[in-house]
Image (cartoon, rainbow, N blue to C red):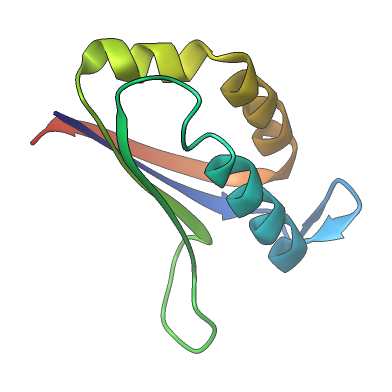
Length: 100
């Protein structure tokens, strides 16, 4: 099983929206990817909670059956469309993939 964890720090304003508004939009877009390919075992999206110390705004924590499932997710049209949105709103991105 492959765990895929990605975090995004968003710009203060982008795409005509605030950081908080874009965080909600990104969460919705990520959650729409939950069942786009076979082999996605788990997909959770979290937003930084107000009042708690956070250095990033949005986190994706997901599990894939194997590398082939992760690879299929990465190139799926729904995910590709999401990348376009993220490119316009992100300030920084961190990612780690590891075997569980």
